[in-house]
Length: 174
Image (cartoon, rainbow, N blue to C red; front, top):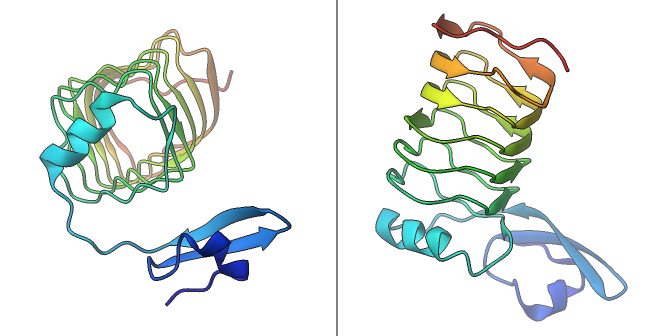
């Protein structure tokens, strides 16, 4: 089902994208993408860093491990069920995204800025958030194993309900 006010300048018809247009501006408010993604192609796409920000990406249940995703921005994206183990997400910005049930082991998240993102049911192991800014994150039902929040610059509105903690200390609000 597609609804595009003013046809989003005719560019997004038949892609499962709904937008709101006012004047010459159009904002995507809903995107449905059922195409099957190739993990290797997605990894290459993100690692090339051609774009300053990757927005509205829908990449569910992909093995994106061993990738270099440092210094990129992921916004309004869905990476539910993906594996980011052994990857660098250093200095990455993640906004309004879905990382439910992801696996993130031995990954670098230092200096990341992560806001309004859902990590419910995720497994995070051997992770450091040193120098990171974290706000409005949900870790409900997640497993946090040896996750280091020491040195976090901002930690506000983090939800840890029903989380399994192993060698992890939940940060105080900063």
